Structures are given as C-alpha cells and as structure tokens.
Length: 79
Image (cartoon, rainbow, N blue to C red):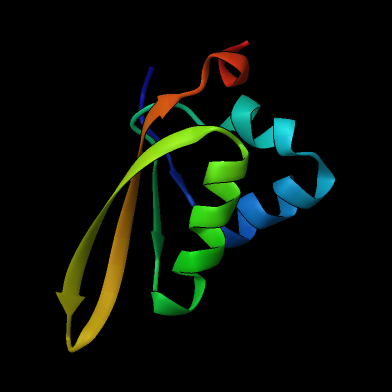
C-alpha cells in the first residue's frame, strides 16, 4: 500500500467525528507534517488511537518542522 501524507487538521476533524475514523484512514508509513504549535495535540491524538509513531525534526529556514511517521498500529486499530 502506498504511503500518504495527512494534515493535522484532517486528523483532528476525523478524531472529533470518531477516533475509529483515524485508524481506518491512516496506515503504516503514512506521514504527518506539523510545527511546534500542533505537535503536542497530534501526539495526543495518535496515542489515544493506539498508533505508534516516530518523530523527526527538521530545521527549515529557522523554523522547526516535525515529520511524524506512523510505525505501527495497535492490534485493536488494525481491524
């Protein structure tokens, strides 16, 4: 399956509708890019949905950009 890129806004909206919607839309290898302002919220959403992730921080023109990669889905989130 091909990896996709998601936005924090997209995942926040899905989470408000139903946390299960996130586990149905997000797959291993998918990426989310965010700045410092939204990283904490994104991490909280991913944890509550049972998604394991890796965060890499890149400095672009003096601003931190965080690349969050989905690494693993909890057993209950796979189905």
